[in-house]
Amino acid sequence: MARFCDRACDAAFAARELTLDRTARARFFRVMQQRIRDEAVLLPLVDDEEYIATNPALQNIRPNMLYDYGNGDRWDVIRR
Image (cartoon, rainbow, N blue to C red; front, side):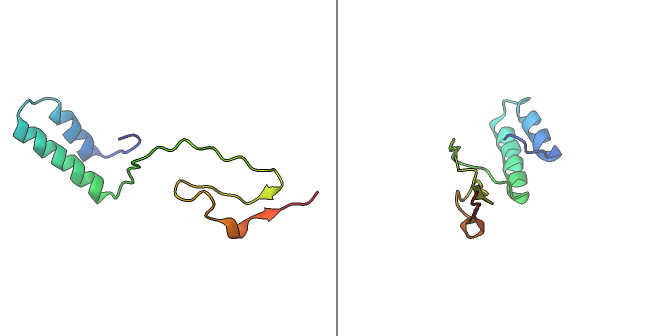
């Protein structure tokens, strides 16, 4: 998983590559899953490549990964 750093998870990932024993591999995967769960890692299931274009007069727009227009109450239009 990109950008997730955890020594226990990395060690389990490396160790599972060194064995063909299904039981041992399952144990290493379980360690990895528990570490990800314990660290409350956000694992996006969809990578939506979306772009938002706005007029430069629109100020304070802050799109984020969950809500494109989540801070609409803070928007302002600058009149020039």
